[in-house]
Length: 355
Image 1 (cartoon, rainbow, N blue to C red):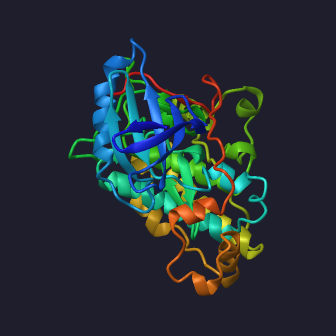
Image 2 (cartoon, rainbow, N blue to C red):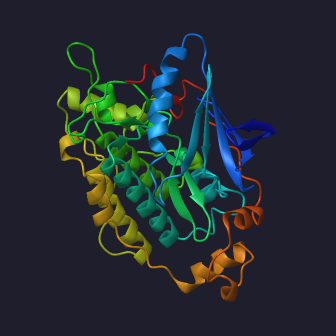
Image 3 (cartoon, rainbow, N blue to C red):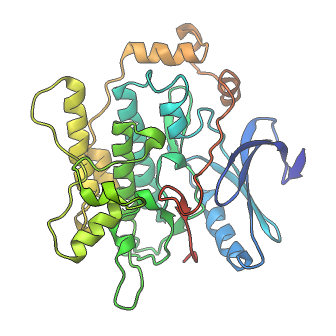
């Protein structure tokens, strides 16, 4: 065990690896399970350590049920340790596509997770934070009942007080979820974007949840030859290209005809919201607050509650106060590895200078 600021890190137990660091299992001062992320800096990248540590430290004050809580940030000479909430179901990909999960997650439960994600993004924006890497792998799922929580704030940035117009210039994020404005530069070669890139990425995340493709990679629902024939060509790239050449804007989703079963009608409603979230013009895109307001509300049925309680080995009579985080974690299988694809893949995180 490695001791850091009162936390005990199990360096032998790795929960996940990413482009920015390794996540270990750890214990807090009370002996409860937490996650410890170690971010190492090279001699070349060390100049960015103080700024990243400062931004991460600001996130400690954020407290919302749809944000994975950061408890403490420890800055060392060439390393940052981030101690954060441990979510027992792992990330959204594991929760929806794990060995026993995919067939058991209902449309209502997916809708509830979508609403959680929207509330999390809205909370960040309301507190002057832009995430810049919203995607299924950066959304954790906790227990009792299943709740989605945004995590992985390595690319996050605090905005100016007038956060609605604050512009960012760094080319960060994950290609498959990047908004068109990441592919459109000014005459001087610079990028200009702001907080609604999070809404765009959230829209593609919702689309991926509906489609349930392998690894929750979103796919365009209106057939397009360019995407089918060009490996690594993303939806955002295509939208930016059509805007550049003043071609009719691309619609990401296909709306079914009226009718169909209730689940089809539900996803039609969500697809209409996705259209607003993925508009090629940032100024015409829905805000996170509007997404929260307009998403249909899930109808939580009794059998869903019973399934959740059964999964946790808790009877309804015992569930009035709910199991503790530690009890819930121990009733589940080990947290799956959060392994990111190799750098250069359209589904891997990219980063340059963090501004």
